[in-house]
Image 1 (cartoon, rainbow, N blue to C red):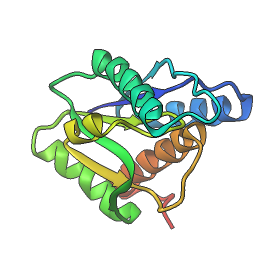
Image 2 (cartoon, rainbow, N blue to C red):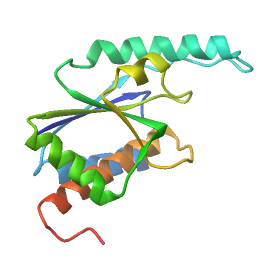
Image 3 (cartoon, one colour):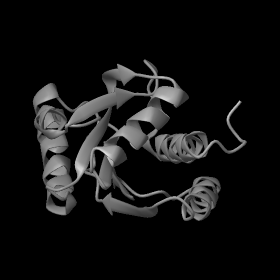
Length: 159
C-alpha cells in the first residue's frame, strides 16, 4: 500500500522533524510512505475573508498539482467524520481490500483548506473539534496511521 501526505507548509522545528522521521521509519515495514510539501502563502495581518479564501485557493492549486487522480483522497478537516483508532484501522484495511492501493491524506495550511479542495476529496475526517498546528497534525496523523497498521496486523502497541 502507498500512503501519501500532501501538506501545506514546511516543518522547521527539529522536534517535529525528529518525530516525523521516527514514524517514517516505523511505517516502512507496512507501506510506502511519501510526504509532499507545497508552499504556503503568507497571510497579511487583518486579512479579509475574501483574501483568506484567495490564499486557500492558491494553496489548493499547489496541492492539485501533486495530487494523483488515482489516489483515494482523505482531507483532514475540522468538520470531517470523527472515528476511533480501530475505525481508522478498519478504514485503511477496507480501502486496501477494495483495491485502493494508494491513499492520500491532505493537511491544509494555517487557514485550513479551500472549499473546492475539500469537495474534491473522497472523504473528510477529523481528529478533533479542536484546531491543531499543521506541523503537529502531521505527527498525529503519522502516529495514527502507524497505530492503524499495528491494529490491522494484530501487533502489540495499541492500548
